[in-house]
Length: 276
Image (cartoon, rainbow, N blue to C red; front, top):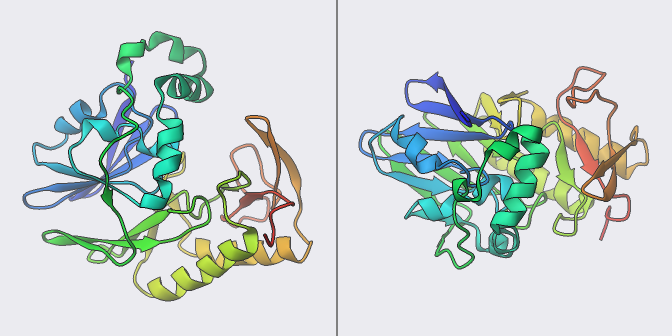
């Protein structure tokens, strides 16, 4: 099965798409590369990366979820915010990832064998990823910003020379904010306001991690509006269920999370987790 495909965003930045819809981003400098996220650990991502570059790769994880961090054992140098290590450890088992593959690929997942999955490494030695860290991939830099909400240790990345922001799952068209690890919605809105101020004027393109590669450049402004509507009790509230958890989609949309009103940002939330 051809699980990975790639698309050039520009000469030095490539998106890597898994067949199940997840997106990774490879930044190629003169002598080394940065890889933002590494998927759910299947079909040897490291070998696929070698078809794109022969330079050494350092991995930077937006967060510790099953669909973003599980190929970490394939790479020597991996950065993850320490607040998300418990999430990674809880979800890295191969059995968990087989279930995830079936959810994303359907019957095609039956073509995968257990040995196609990266062996689980719960005690993976991560480098700690912290707010304000800047990494040199000359002639480019990767700047890390803490953006808690979706998970306690969610991080986003700015490539200032390209004016490109990679938001991962922190803020997109279907931001999950309903499980036990998510922040209360009021705290998430505070984080949004902070990060919007820190990044104002520094980017003109935004990339996310699922299905649709590029987001509306005003996605954070729109998400603040969505949060305000939820907190005021004015959201559309479409019922939503995921892996036995019930929640609500804030704004009316179709099955691809395309909003009826034409705006991009949307949020799926737990009504019992608004303020605490």
